Length: 190
Image (cartoon, rainbow, N blue to C red; front, side, top):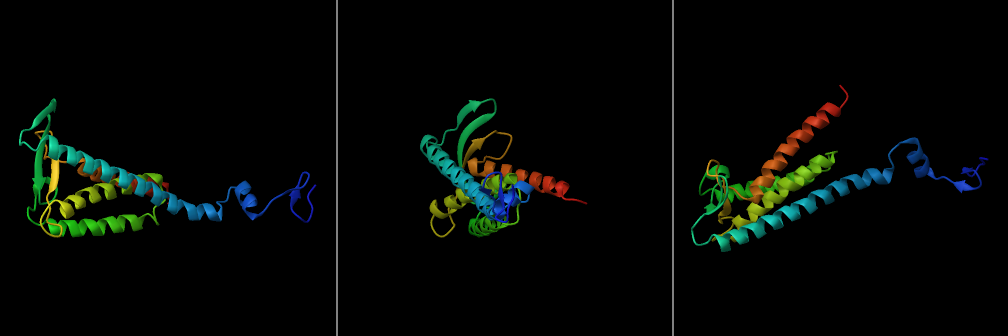
């Protein structure tokens, strides 16, 4: 029995959100929560990556500070090096510029979550931001002067440039961002 008060079957009342949920239309509150939850996912991943990166670098500095590399398995060695440049040790000495650009990238990536619609892109942004923060931390706190620190690298395959956990996160996050963009472009109607 349905009356003027929108009650159904014995007095259960429905409000506008219940009607929208039953019809399959997204709730207004849900639409507001999605950007916040994506931001939460990204921030949680970024904090985890940055913390793990700094813990692993602290370990490398203590365990490998004697200058000797340690063989792990196959071609993998732990080999402590310091990088004042950018990826693949290019641009030595331009660390302050790289650090400033990385800070801008972090802000832009976090702001981009407002437009991004997938959980995959939120994960990717978290990885990139966490890796960038890990390496920016080295530039801020492991040197003399603003952004003049050197990045600690220690993962050495002997056939690839030496890298760290932050570098892995940035690379994997970048690949996931590309994958997310491809998926989103295919999902859009033509």
